[in-house]
Image (cartoon, rainbow, N blue to C red; front, side, top):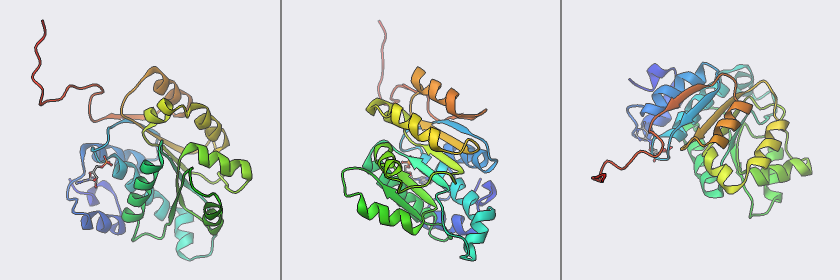
Length: 230
Ligand code: AMP
């Protein structure tokens, strides 16, 4: 199986090939067709499985080839945030945005990352310039909502990355507030390494008939450790 046979455009396949990826990982092989098909996704995947490309590649494909994306190519429409990726920490947010940038370098889409702990004014300017794909931590995103410096009404795709860690940090109320600002008609992709009752409740509340994918069993034991039970 190759990235091209999964339905990704030449521009995206080229960026991926330049990274030296030849074969999609299991999460990519399952997530890419599911997201291109337009449905919601509930994915159990840990870091190291290739999950970032698993949601980034089909997201780039959809946004660059849909009606708005094609218009953007003619530079006639101002950019509005159409994909929002929420991550628990600034490090992860920055890392994910780097991947979006890398995999999307031959598309006509742009991206930005916003997180707390740094000045808000450069971010306000960045958002005012127009962004297609925004990666954010929940707290700082709500700061912008509060100040009226961000518009979330054109979002087509929402990704909750490492959702379990976001709940561990205590972001559930923030997530719920953000979800209430988003258009009801959208694609939602939830990635989590574990499926606690809280994650299941979150998925039940905000995902519609999601495709369920799991690439590594939660709490699987390390294959390198020999175990005896007495
Ligand atoms: P992630 O699980 O998204 O943090 O990705 C883990 C690592 O796998 C990253 O360093 C990626 O660059 C790499 N990676 C992602 N997809 C592939 C692939 N299809 N083939 C080889 N490496 C990959």
